[in-house]
Structures are given as structure tokens and as C-alpha cells.
Amino acid sequence: MLRHIQIRNLVIVQELSLDLPAGMAVLTGETGAGKSILIDALGLALGGKTDRGMIRPGCETAEVSAVFDLEDRPGVADWLDTQELASDGECIVRRVLVREGRSRAFVNGRPVTQQLLRELGEQLVEIHGQHEHQRLLRPAVQRQLLDAWAGHDDLLRKVSEAHARWQEQKARFEQLQAQTEERAQRMDYLQYQIGELERLRPAMESLQSLEQEQKRLANADELGSEVNWLLDLLQEADGAVQAGLSRAALDTGRLTDSLAGELAPAAELLESARIQVEEAVSLLQEFGSRIEHDPQRLAEVDHQLGELHDMARKHRTQAERLPGLLEALQDEFALLENAESSLAGLERELESSRMAYLRACTALGKSRRKAATRLSGKLTASMQELAMEGGRFEIEVGELSEEMGKAHGLDEIRFLVSANPGQPLAPLAKVASGGELSRLSLAIQVATADIGTVPTLIFDEVDVGIGGAVAETVGRLLRELGKRRQVLCVTHLPQVAAQGHAHFQVSKERKQKSTRTRIIPLDEEARIREIARMVGGSRITPQTLAHAREMISGV
Image 1 (cartoon, one colour):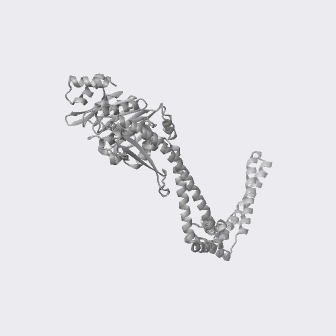
Image 2 (cartoon, one colour; image 1 turned 135 degrees about the vertical axis):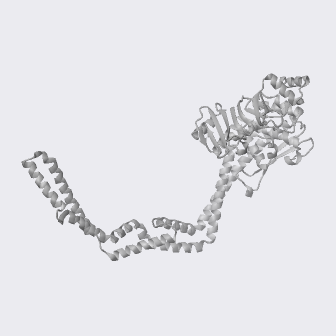
């Protein structure tokens, strides 16, 4: 649940720090006081869109931070661990807006992307806005609400995966079918290309050795001269190394034997050097004997390498990749050669994946119809409490044609309503008035929110368009929901405000040339006065105070 929120320099909030309790907390205040600022700030902290205009005038940055208790939400804690954002029982999110730069986001002190922050926010808070009833008219939203209430995520996943496989097989089948129609022409062209490459296969397979041979042949004269120079230096020139080392080794050995035994190590080193020079001379002589001076062979090697590089340029690749290209062309040729059998095999696979999709859709449709019956009954009962006695709500689950199959199945979901006895069922948009639609929307939100896993629910003036006994029922529904989840409710109705477990007042202060919003928790007496104001306006009388006390005590 949301335990604490802090706002700095956001819109007309200069500094705000607020602890939030469990249960149902209501936020009230006069029109224009900025009751929704807390909701807007929280949405921003959890990955909402930023706007530099939200930064308080005269300030360079704005900041929102929120602390969530994860004690009873191990799933969120596990998700944080997988993102290397260890929680230790709580989650601290922070969003910083910069007037002259990009916004920054942090989770538990570590920088994160806006997308990751949004994914986290979806697990922590669910916001129901005052225009939610307009979304309710969209078929996709109706389907999503039914699926969320049914809780059949596994069936949805199976349908989505089966649909993806079916579409993939369908694309492969259609591609091969199109290729088969042009098969002969393509095969002739492939056969020509394969023939060209096959002719060069020996050269392709010995590319590395050809390049090495070409290097040796092209540099034979230079190599021969260098080897001869080294041999001359070591053996034949005046002061040749080999002869000098031999004399030095012999003389040092004689001195060691006759006069200076301590020169033994030097004698050993010189003898070792003499032997190594002899071995080096032998290796140089052997290498020199293998140096080829063969212009004809060099021309042959140059020709083979030239053909390889010409072929590589033709195919826009590198010479060393020609064997892989040949293999790919041969595979394509084989596929086309066996096109009829391949097409038949793919057609069988396509039919198998289609049937798997239809089976998954059947299971999902069955679950949807079962859930639709239960949710329809629950919402019909809620209508009786919300001043629509005799009204009826029904969720119709129709079946689409196979050609219209989507990743979410073959079902067409429609919310139908009869607001009055004897009135036929009709789509929501056609029969519900604005007030009825608001009440139905709230009933659906409460019914579907009750089964969710998000710990904090926010209702931002969702009670617009209702009043009287209906407002009292709405407040009671939200209070009941607050016993199981944390509920934050922005309201202008005293009947709803009286149902809260906690009450916060939003007010606007004007000082000289600046304005700021304050949010304060109300004690019992202050709460009575605030509800009295909501009942009777700015003029609070003994009667409105008494009525406010009665409303609170009646909860």
C-alpha cells in the first residue's frame, strides 16, 4: 500500500508531505482547491507523461516521491529483485522534472527508465478517473473488464500463443505457395548461380592456403634476398657470427680448463649460443631451399583468387562467405524442388495450428460465458441499490467468424442494460443516461477492482452525476472495498466523504503574488465541519453541523 507521498514545486504545491493510512481515505475541498493534485502527482511518480509546465513558476525542478509498503505483496518484491532493484520490504519511487532537461526516475535509489517505472506502477496503483464511464462504452474495454474479473489469464495466454503460431504458419504457407507459382523461373536462376559457385568450390575451400601461397610467390625474390643476407651475416662475411662464436667458445673453454675455472658459466653460455646459431643457419638454409620462383604458378593463383573476389562482389558478400552462400542457395533450390510435398506438409501444420487456436478459443469462450453470467447477476443486484430498481444488466458473449479471429479470441463482448422494468436490453451507449452510466460505471469499477491484485485503488471524482441515497450507497461500497484494499477517493459528496476511514482536506492559500495547495488530515471535529460545509456551503449552521455528525455516526 501507499504509505507516504512527498511533492515539491509541482504546479501550485510548494512543499507537501503526507502519510496515508490503510482503508478508505477521502480527499475533499472547495472547487478549484486542487483536489486532484495528489492523484496527478502519484501518476507522475509512477511513469505518467511529463510536462515542463507542471513545474511551479520560478523553480527549475519539481519532484515527487512515494513510499510503498510491500509486506503483503511478495509478487512485487520478487519483480523488483529480478530487475536488480532490491526492496527490503518497501519500494521508494522518485520522479524529478527538470525545466531545461529530461526528467529522471529512480526506484530504491537506482535510476530507471520511464517504461520500467510504468510497469512497476501498474502493479502498485490502479487509478479510476471521472471519465471512466466514457471508456466503458468501448468494446475492447468491456472485454478487458470481463477478462480481468474472470481471472482466466492462463486461457488468454494460450489463445494468444495459439493465434501467433497459426498466423506464423499461415504466412509461411502463403509465402511458399507464392514461391511455388514462380518455381520454375526461380529454380533456373538458382541452378545457374549454384553452377557458377560449384565451379569455384575447390578454390573456395582452399581460400586461406591460396592467399598464403600467393603471398609467398609474390614475395619470393625479396624472401630469397633476405635469407641469403642473413646466411652471409651468420656464416660467410668478415667477422661472421658463427665463426666468431665458435672461436669465442673454444678460447673460453681453454681458459676455463687452464687458468680461470670461474669462467665456466660464460663458456657454457657461449657454447649454447654457438649451437643455437648453427640450428638457426640450418633452418634458414632449409627455408631458402623451399622458396619458389614460379611466375606461372603465381599467375594461376592470382587468377583463382581474382575469380573468387569477383564472385563475392557479384553477390555483395566476402570471399570467405561464399561457401555459406552456396549452401543457402542449395537449400532454397531443394525447398523449391520439393515444393509440392513441402506445401502439403505446411498445409497440414497450418490446419493443426488452426484447430489448436479454435480449441483454445472454445475454452476461453466457455470461461467468459460462465464469468459473464456471474458478473451480470452481481451488477444487476448493484443496480437495485443505485436507484435503478427493476433494471437489468447482461453481458452478451457472441461468437465472431473464424476469419475475424484475434489474439484475444473469437468472442464479441457487449454490455447490455435495461434501466427500467419492461425495457428491452440494449447496448450500454444507447439506453443509459449520463447519470445512469456514471452509476453503472462505478458499480463495474467496484466489482472488478475487488478481485484485482493491485494494493492501492484511487477513485478520482467517479461519483459525478449522483446524489442523495445513491451517493450514500456509493460511499458504502467504497468503504467495503477499503476493508480489503487501500482506497483513496477524491469526492465532492458529503455522503461519500462520511464513509471514509480517514479524511484529508485540500485547500488553496494565496500569499501576496503566490498560491499554494495544502493537504491536511482532519481530526473528528474538523471533519464534522468539513462535511457540514459540503452539505450546506460556506455558511455552516448548527443544523448542518448536526446533520454532519449524524452522517458520520451512522457509518
